[in-house]
Amino acid sequence: MSTAAAKCSLCKHRVAFFQRSYSGEKLCKQCFSESIENKVRATITRYKMLNYNDTIAIAVSGGKDSISLLHVLASMERKFPRASLFAVTVDEGIKGYRDEALGIVVKTCKDLDIKNHVVSFKSLYGFTLDELVWRMQDRKVALTPCAFCGVLRRKALNAGALAVGANKIATAHTLDDEVQTSLLNIFHGDVARLASEKPVTDLVHPLLVQKVKPFCEIPEKESALYAYIKGLDFQSTPCPYASEAMRNDIRVLLNQIEERHAGTKFTVFRSIEKLRPALIKIAEKGDFNECTQCGAPSVGDLCMACQLINQIR
Ligand code: SF4
Ligand SMILES: [Zn+2]
Ligand SMILES: [Zn+2]
Image (cartoon, helix red, strand yellow):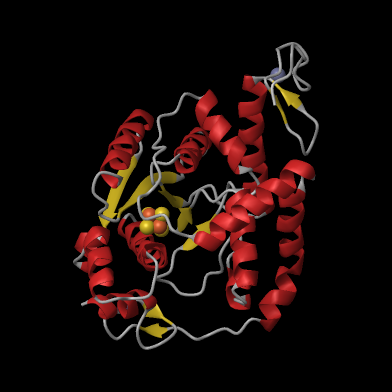
């Protein structure tokens, strides 16, 4: 990664500190940061993710990727005064973990002059994740905390975005997240999700805020490097419940392949993007009703979140 005293391929005069193995570029810190911001801008334009007058809820957990995204979008927003940015943070209620992240998010938002809205599991569902996990174990519910939490987090984030009047949710999913998710969906045989989990989600219901992923072409390693170079404060301790065993296997496998064949993650990402129109045609689509319990948009009588909560009540 480090290069003795090689010059930056872009500015040609500062010393390079990082080499992009998939492009061969050697970059100084300043050109690297600018290249990330330019790449994000190009992704937003390519996928028509944002409009000049959008109200954008940025999903900010306090980790390196979401804090980097917050900084990149905040710097872009200054050129688009009619756009509004909010940070929306989901507080799952994980003692000793989420509390630290919330502190980092509050301070970052204050520094950037961005309003922060917190939506908690406790207020939305009546339980913290700690309480839910305890009940899951007590009732022998055969689901991992992540499977449970993932569904509840999605609904909470949407609720937070609606509360601030957002018409877009920007999440910090990186290239690595996107490729891992696509392979996970293939391994699970979930063609509907493979078709629908894309850089810009479809507008399927007025109460489901459209999601965009401006970091979908940024490798996770580079998102971390951006946070490091900019001196950003972020939470680095992992969630104590993190348990996505298959995703971890896929992550390790992809990193090994990428190490030997640079650019593989981009190739997988682009292949899925090319296949998407055909996938959408064969994926089964359900019509949306209202969840009979909470009123949220739902394909069945009960939304996924209510189905899960009912299991542990
Ligand atoms: S790692 Fe799993 S349990 Fe922890 S916040 Fe993420 S989805 Fe929830
Ligand atoms: Zn340079
Ligand atoms: Zn419901």
